Image (cartoon, rainbow, N blue to C red; front, top):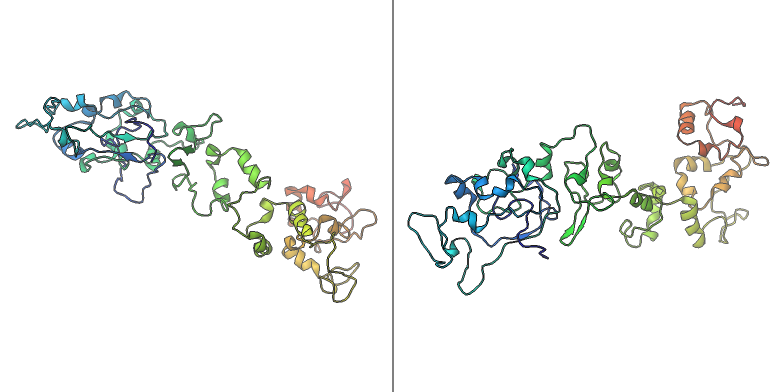
Length: 395
C-alpha cells in the first residue's frame, strides 16, 4: 500500500479510537477502504481501559473541539500521555509503583533501545470534516461505544448511513461535494493513489453493483439521483450516443452472438446504436442488406429471403406486418427507412399504404404517439393538414 503521509488524520483516530459507528460490530455496515484507507498502527492501546479509569475524550483529543479540517492531526501526542503516564525518555524501562505504565514497550510492542520507534502511518481520508461544528454532539453518536473498544481502527469511524441519521436535507437536493473532495469542475474526485471511489452503499440508492454499467436506468431516474455528483453529463452522452465504444459493456466475441439479444430487444440496442447508421451499415459491409450484392433474389423462386406474400402491393397477405409490429428491430437489421416509405408514405407516387390498424386516427394510442414524438409521424404524413390525430381526411 502506498502511504502518503505520517499521522495526518481526518478522523481523530484510527489509531486512538476516536472512531466508530453506532453499529460498530454490525458486519452489514460498509466502511469504504477508499474513504477510510488502510492504516498501519503499531501500538498497544485500550480505549476501554482508559474510559473505565475516568479518562475523557477531550482530555486526550483537545484539538478535536477546534479542528476544522479532516487533515488535522488529532492523535494525542506524548505530551497528552504524560498527564497520566510518568514517561521518562532517559529511563525507557521506568516502572513507578501505583502509576500507569511508563516503559516504552508498554505502548510500542517490540521496542528495542537500539532501534527507532515504529511510526503510525495513515493515508489521509478524502473527506471534508469540521470537528468544531460537532463538538457539542456526544462522541459516541459518531464513533460508537468506545467502552467496548481497545485499539480503534477505521471501524470506529462513521459511515455515510450514520452521518445521514442527522444530516437530512428533506426535499432539497443532496450535494455530495459538501463532504467529499471535489474536482475543479465540481464533481466528486473518485481517483486516488489508494484506489477508485465507487458507490457501494444502498443508503443513497446508487450502489454500483455487478451489471450496473448495463442496467442503471432505475437509479438514474429516481428523484434525487446523485449521478451528476461524480459524472459529467458528457460521459452519459458519449456512451448513449454511441460516440465511444465502451469495451467493457459487451462480452468478448459479442458480434457473433449479438443477434440473440437484438431479436429479443434486451438490452435495447437503440439506446446506444442507431439502426440505420450503425446496424444496417455494418450488416451491409458484411454482405447482408438490400443495397449490396448478395445471394438473395426476390424475383427468383427459391432465392427469396422472405416467403411468398411477405410484402405485396395492394390487398395481398402482406405477412411482414405482423413481424414488423412484433419486433421492428428485426426488419431494421437489413432495411433502411426508405424501404418502408416506398409503400407507407403519402408522398406523390407512393402506394399510400397505411401501417395503422382500423380506427387508428383519434385513438388514445395515436394521440399518445403524436404527443410523444410527432417527428415520427412526419415521415409519412408530409403536409400540415395531415398532422394530429383528428384531421378530416377519410378514416
